[in-house]
Length: 174
Ligand SMILES: [Zn+2]
Picture 1 (cartoon, rainbow, N blue to C red):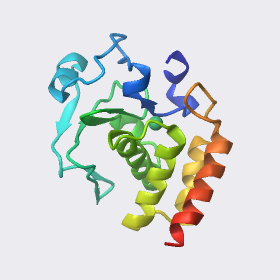
Picture 2: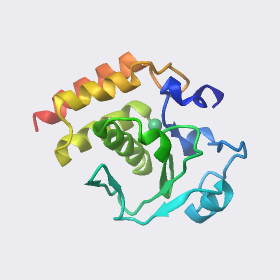
Picture 3: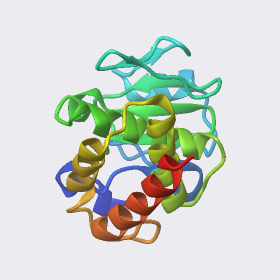
């Protein structure tokens, strides 16, 4: 996905299994690599065991998924069937709710959601359930994706935001 290779576009998050992810080094991965294979290939990635991930002090878990921190990933995050990849260099630049929502979005993919809008809503619902997502946090997420360009899998930022606001309203009532 060349259009996603520039983090400044905030295009974020590919659906790895569907789109055939490529690492920054350009070699495509198999659809279902083991975390160790990914780490061996990428060079300076690190494995965070399940249950050991903390994002700005928030412990985050997604089923049995481990997390790989890869500062050379060409996006903020990516999902593989068995693990989630986060780019710690890019994560350092975004607000806490944005970090947690990105992780939640990828967790949606790992949990079986292929649709990007559904993964967006999954992250929002997770934030409400876990108590870290406020209306202000949702505004930060919308600002973050606001400049994202649409592509084959993603709506444009404003449309994603509108869908997430609807998702928030629906899940906040529960
Ligand atoms: Zn996605």
